[in-house]
Length: 114
Length: 114
Image (cartoon, rainbow over all chains, first blue to last red; front, side, top):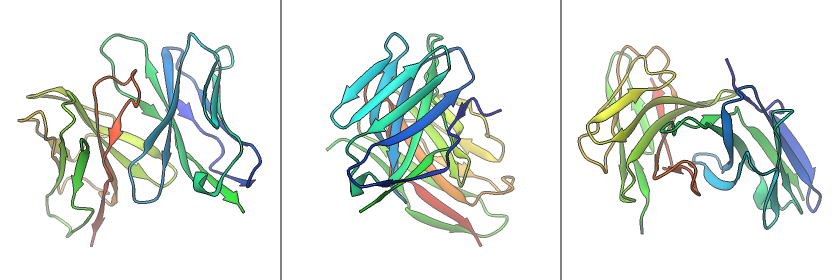
């Protein structure tokens, strides 16, 4: 039962344009969401997070949007750069106290075309 | 520099052998996690530990074992009972999943059964 879904396994975007990566979740207990970026043969690195009390969070070129009613979040990267080519994972955390286990999506491979 | 170190980077195992993957952190994090990455399946939780001398099974613990005798160390043993051990294994640690960066990941170990 995949509680966090990234339905696009891959995405190609022209350099300089906007990249939009999507993530859907089914568990209404999730209230905190994170995005990680992963290069081949390396560990994921943290990009940006959002709490369910907000609907948007921005950090430089990265913005995450959360639509709680649709159980959907998206990561916008603008402008896209060649170094953004990587696999992106969204992850979710439930609000029950003491539960620190992140549930990850299946990932989206982003390729930026020069 | 604080960080989390996984070794070895590549590991080859013969059928029927047990192997142990090392994970060491000097971040003073209480919680540590083991995930497995397979193509198209994202990151799946094998075991986690929130304090020394205590650990819990994750979603796919069968065929694996762990120990947490020291705060800094969380080794994972892949036993011969694990039917499909070839994968990329990631170790992570955390103070709090709700505080940036959530989890800090090691650079991973690629295990191949030969």
